[in-house]
Image (cartoon, rainbow, N blue to C red; front, side, top):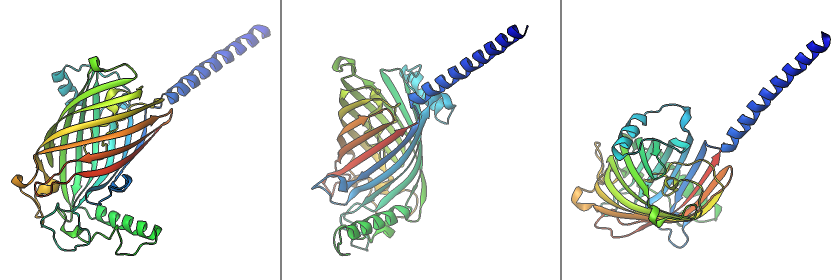
Length: 352
């Protein structure tokens, strides 16, 4: 009897240990998937050598938190699913479909040393925002949706720019009058003092299978609609070439500003990419102002209604991280200033 009891006891221990090991192995396997994480994105015109002019879109920064679809339901679910049904997208077979991003943007005129309102250049303007993004895809088509709640006219971006310029001058032992100078006109920015704003964006992307080579090359076409403080429609395309493992819709183009980027799960990959958009602009509060009075604004007839933007970059993906370096360009926003904008981007994502 003791022998039987001992065997039964050992057998129970074996079953418990096996069960515990299976749970542990499952947990390790889940961890290996690395399908949640955090991203850090920085845009700066200083990142592109020989082209730093410190004007127009001069800087941007964002932190993005992303996670797997099985975590729960979120505000965009109903909207994305309904729009997906219209487009014939009935299911999602990707792991990362949700994200929240906290970011800031800053735009300035050319002459930062002038403390008076500048009426013949783009106005100072800024945005601090929180956005919620969602992707629905069937592997060939992808619908990305974003709801953004923001604050135009905060003093923080101007103070951040002034502090960054000051640290740069100190680091290189420059005089206060040397570039980059202290920006003195932020009190004339759009909606100075702060004003709430909102934007909804929908983007539909489709991989062109006839032009693509699985895991080596993909060509994607996009069309999108933006409603709110920036109201426009856009058409574009993107190309990736290299060792491709992530889905076509996860191209890390312009994530801080107006890109439709949502991260995919961690992959061991590398690729070169390029992207291009033509944007048909109806309204831009960062140029035309919103509800509050602003000292410097431009009316509908003075802004460009067809604006082009594009970028090139290199993306390196690893088991637990991804790094992207890019150079970006945008055509003029105002008819009186036919000049292009150039800035660099550094994006880093860590997966857990």
